[in-house]
Image (cartoon, rainbow, N blue to C red; front, top):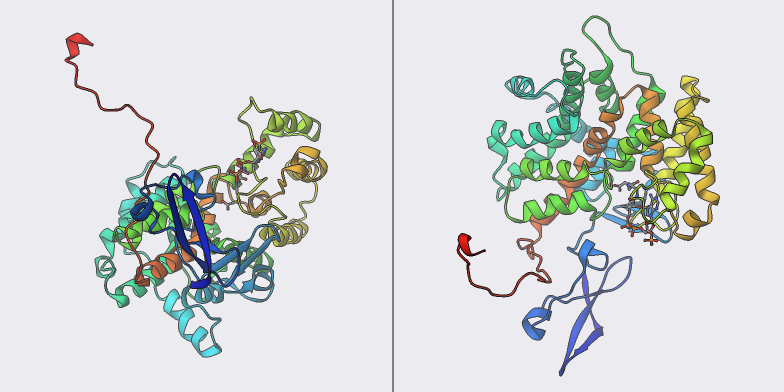
Length: 432
Ligand code: CMC
């Protein structure tokens, strides 16, 4: 980020007046460099939820929430979703440029060579209860990778960082598919490197040893798009978690496991599962007004899952592509009128017209439509967030690699506004 010598920000408080340099990003609002604020002014800033704080410098993903724009390395998400494919997008996110044909020919087998899991890991799965949520299994298995791949945990070695990145991207579909297979009591299906990334994942989820599964190209394309649309999203909660974990020097597998744990929450990646559960709970179109009323009621914690976004205050650009994909998939599968879909369509219509949602700019987000597609494909709701985690792994890995290579990188250590008790003396238990 360039320091802009012509612009400074003046901060005045008490008898102090301090000047801070401004930084100009390539896109987006200017940034005030307050790194010296505490040293010079003996004060902190207060910004819970980081709504006004840039926690790092990054050249990977850009979001303009007002315009409803999402760029990976400068390329609009709708162009990538239409013209590219997931492994090409992985290359773009990791290395900064779209690959040439030769680079892609080198990259794709470099990933597919690593799709198998160390065989000992099958026993690790067996330690989980069968009814464990696949996200719980994924957090455990990904965290355990550092115990299986010692030779790629030295973060000071660029070659080890690279191999760790490739391993994560290659193995995460196998890890997610096996978490699913384990939860339904079916044998693990090994990866097939003759299939593309999305088809291989569908095959590992839906094939069984007794019967082969032929991947429909429309479903594989839709899956690939879901991966592309979820691949990265700037400094969201899980990515910031990965960066914070990584800032202490933790190994990449531990950092990605931390990101998966954070993604699980219903305000983040867990929203797609929560959204479909909500549509099912609503059940029929006539019950929608009751749920809309609950969403508006300040005394009711209920929120319409799949609506709203911290950054997008216009339509979520991913949701636009996802909606089109949902229409294609439902058309192919001949599902155009099941009750969940009817509720979804009517809820979308009402929310887009309702004053509360319009005024607060609460549009359907990516999770609203992805849940509908994944449900139609035959995935149980418990697999929705693992699929999000699978897709986001490349984003987490790219952001982690960028952070480690950044010479200004420091351990993340926010400060606080302390409102607890002042000094007091210990009182013996019998006197309390
Ligand atoms: N239903 C009803 N009201 C809502 C909703 C909703 N889904 N989302 C926000 N609001 C209201 C909220 O009550 C608040 O009202 P007021 O100003 O009167 O207090 C106002 O809108 C602003 O909400 P906020 O909580 O300050 O906004 P935020 O930026 O902190 O939260 C959010 C963003 C995504 C957590 C939130 O919109 C939400 O909980 N949505 C449902 C969960 C969801 O779909 N999450 C997936 C996000 S997209 C995938 C991803 O990137 O992870």
